[in-house]
Image 1 (tube, one colour):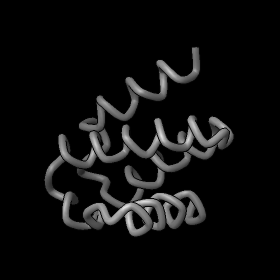
Image 2 (tube, helix red, strand yellow):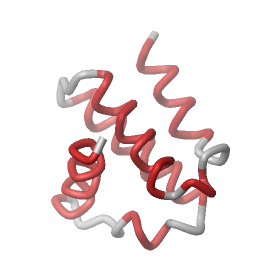
Image 3 (cartoon, helix red, strand yellow):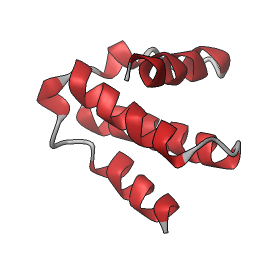
Length: 81
């Protein structure tokens, strides 16, 4: 799961986006950032599991966001179908 977290953070650095830590108490912003990452990863041909692991890594790191990442989960559902 750590690799998925690092990949997510590296993506934010590469595209000069805010550090995910800045959204640790803003579930909507974190969910939207994750959704953008998922769309990028899908477009880049990354395995679906990499995106799912990124969402799980964020939930593991910020347990208080567990039930608040709806946009990210909705994006995963869309990409899975």
